[in-house]
Image (cartoon, rainbow, N blue to C red; front, side, top):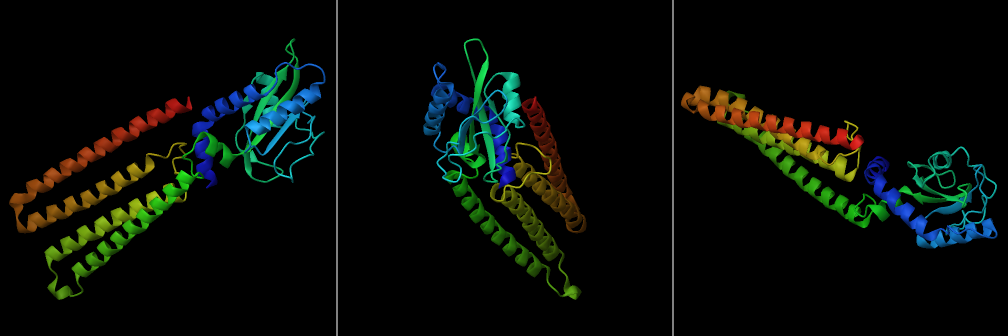
Length: 303
């Protein structure tokens, strides 16, 4: 589910940064006096209490060197790290350059090898000199659960995956029944082929194919969480687009079959096939407008 998680994080990153910077700002002492290191350690412990799901809390100096040991609820991560050089980390030089709280992109943790994000909060003295940068490492799963409760790894997200899986299996069963009925309607006696049976079989098989395509789209996006081919950060419209595309293809085949059927049996009813073609054209126009509006919205969001 890594791709899906990264996509969700990209959507809620602004909210996540605002939330974490607010929590850090409230729990970090801004009146640093006396022993700076003791004040920073006290702030780090207070911050860990405010963010219990945080993987690590630590601080680095103006040169990017860690000045206190790791503070963590994980015994494997607790009590070491002081003296580590973190000057090559993105959160260090971005915070140094922009003089404000920063939140990184997800990256693999060296200690746990899981995807984490780091929130960095700079501390300045009264003369605007940087004293230290307090850092909080939070796993990508936990930040999604905090800021985006309906994420793929939350309880609600897990429930959604189960529901979509059940519906996918049910729809696949319907598609299989339609396929078997369509094959049976066709018959194997080529000497006594009935045109009506051929049309019935074609309709059933086409509908079965449309349902299978819909199941594939739902299962890949909602259960497996695969990235859509367009590379969009928002794939919430992809199922609708694929479903409408399947319906348009199915109706086009039906319209073609009706043209042949009425041409052979009742030419006066060809007008009904024309009406169906008109409806298909309307669907194509509507889908084109939908895609255009969605594309413009994505461009605005990127800006």
